[in-house]
View: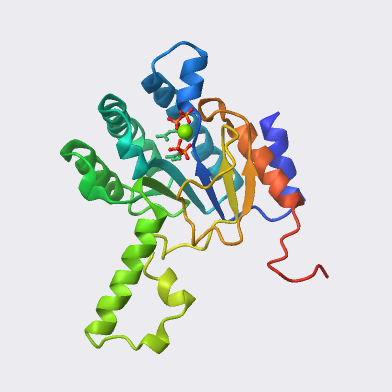
Length: 246
Ligand code: IPE
Ligand code: IPE
Ligand code: MG
């Protein structure tokens, strides 16, 4: 079934070069099974495996996953500990396979707020997979888009103050180059699971012209097939970028 969809999206049109996903609904998935929330996050790791696999198969170049927001630091400490533990577990379990399959992992966010264990794990996986060229996998952890844009503005101001930059040279490209996503094109497709119709402070600048795809599927239930369905829907969209259709 999902392989059929994969064949179809290959012939139907261009595959998005960059897919971004707000992985939402782990808590509701657990609640629906009368389980504690951390078990929902644990189940969500399976969906991460699914989408990485699906992106490799569909030859998507960049996959950016929203795993933990700066606002999520306001959650109960036990939940935060569970999430950070899972991050370490994911890296310990998957790093070797990611490297072997040519996946290059990068972590985007304020890593200073991570505990020692999680920070060492993310620094190690970034080094260990640095040679990967098949798929760029960006994990947004302790990430806030407004904080990212604010940091870019501060850096521009510092460069102007130091006499290294003329304010007249500040254009959109100059801002984009100072964002955490400077190395990649903007996302073509944003997927949000669990039916929520909001951006939640994710890639506000970069999503300017992304196609939005919201599915009621809860993150732990999201599979390759759901990813391929989203790509097929993307291929049916008419992206006009403000122009009129030819
Ligand atoms: C997404 O699932 C994971 C994180 C935000 C860390 P949630 O934990 O937000 O799940 P819901 O939205 O409560 O169902
Ligand atoms: C957004 O989900 C952040 C991540 C998926 C990591 P949230 O569950 O935190 O977002 P809100 O609170 O519903 O907006
Ligand atoms: Mg949520």
